[in-house]
Amino acid sequence: MARTLYDKIWDEHVVHTEEDGTAILYIDRHLVHEVTSPQAFEGLREAGRKLWRISSVVATADHNTPTTGWERGYEGIADPTSKEQVTTLDHNIAEFGAAAFFPFLSKRQGIVHVIGPESGATLPGMTVVCGDSHTSTHGAFGALAHGIGTSEVEHVMATQTLLGKKAKNMLVKVDGKLPLGCTAKDIVLAIIGKIGTAGGTGYTIEFAGSSQRPWRDHGRGILRTRAAGPGSVDSCELGRPSQAEERRTVDRAHRARAPVFPNVRPVGRVLEDAPAAG
Image (cartoon, rainbow, N blue to C red; front, side, top):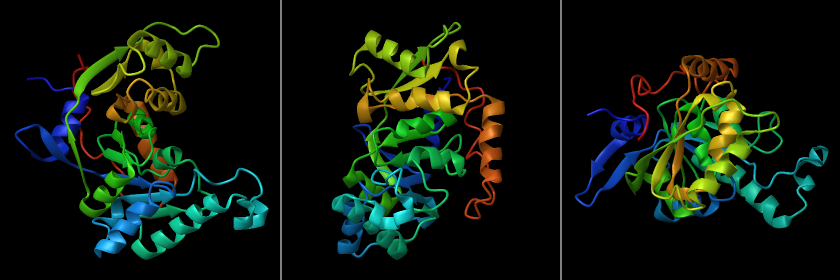
């Protein structure tokens, strides 16, 4: 039986499936930020556990970091709660470790869903999780990406797996040339207008069609990140990158010269010959 892109990635990462369909899914990459990680790290600390696989963790402070006032250092973070979350992440990474950490004031610090592809941490065929609802952004690069909650963040840290049931497949195909001024956000709003704000719940959406083929990575990423709208955290959005886009993702990782990712390559050739979702 032919398998979709989602089917292939899921099947390659399933550790075990119960009779009721609940599965244990292995996670390749865990993106961590300062908002949903403090309680998770504290849970590990109280249980006397360590990170199951330090090499899977890429962390940055991004939700509470100001865009101005960097010359003042940490004093430039005006809100005390925000500052505490940022400094707590610094302390937790120092204690538990990470494959890569881009702290506040680092030249490579940035939005967690941007630095993943930028640094070669997000690659086609991977399973990616982050404690953020817009983790579906990474689907633009052929990864199966889930936004998870704080308790799930701790579970992945401790076991390198995620519990869940396999979603149904949904294909959203948009063909034709977009009119001047029409962007990825407009397409998402049109899709939500068709299927509703909960139309993607329980589905993994695969986007296809000629309208997005000319787009570069940022346009594809915008489409996936905003597509959390029709499905919230219950859906993840996949894109099928062309060979050129896949090559660009890997080449970008090499140019980043990140020593923690010395042999950057797609996890598996899961993209080949996968039929579109029905």
